[in-house]
Length: 58
Image (cartoon, rainbow, N blue to C red; front, side, top):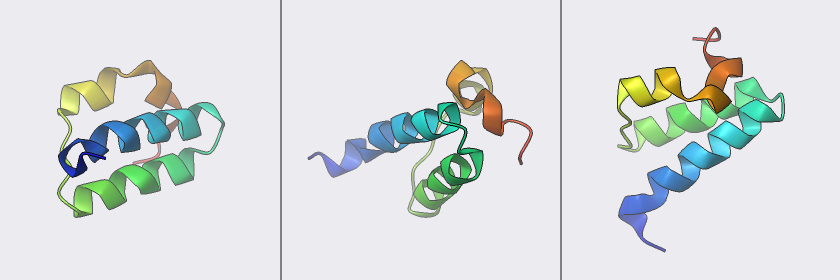
C-alpha cells in the first residue's frame, strides 16, 4: 500500500459511512486522518455529494 495515498481510502471510507447513515463515524474518520496529516481541498469536502449527511454535523 502507498502510505502517501491512504487519504484516498479514508475519503472513500468516509463517503461510504456517510451514505450508510453513519455520519458520526464518517466525520471521525476524516478528523483522525487530518490529525495524522491528511489534507483535502475544502471545495472537495463541500461539494462531494456522498458527504452530504455530515455537512451539517461540524
